[in-house]
Length: 89
Image (tube, rainbow, N blue to C red; front, top):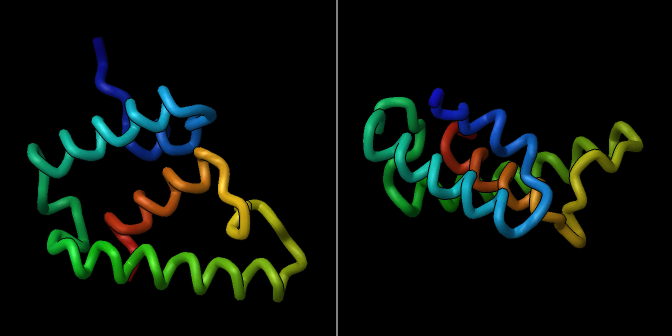
């Protein structure tokens, strides 16, 4: 069985169970391929989440969009935050 890509899993998170599957895949990717993470230290990871939420909110206001529910996040938005922690600078 092919392991699902973390990006695909994040995009398809819709409930608690699919979020947990995404987190499991993200953990496995970190263990097996830590060089794919831009932010390996927890403080950098959390800084990246914070920066992504801040920047995404500003972008949504400027573009009159609400594709991510940042004021009342759903499971997919939370997964996107964690994914941002992996790669956002």
